Image (cartoon, rainbow, N blue to C red; front, side, top):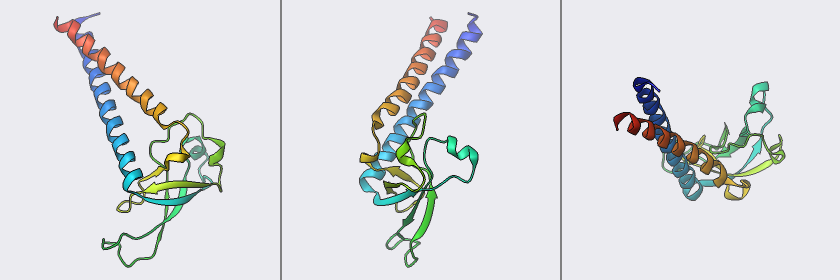
Length: 152
């Protein structure tokens, strides 16, 4: 392999792998924080208006969010929120997320559109996180290996 090609390829792989690992860590931290400190609620799976929306593995959820106490929205009535949960990445949408089904969620009271599925609603949450982390680690290792071969 040409030195320039190896250097550019190694740099791209290392940057992609590093960025993917940082994204995985930030997403995992955000989901854990919302599950621990968020407001529990029950959402309803909404039927998709867009034909392409059915291809998304994360269901479209609707729920009523309470206004934050003492915050900028204090004194308002509950608002209806339409959003998709974070961190839900199976290849196909499970049958239990059919339109009209109830789903337990937790949401961030400051940003009600930031929603995660409750711990009992996810069958294997760590599997997807491990796969994305393995992809990031593999890309980072391949990139560092290429860069080391060019330098050494």
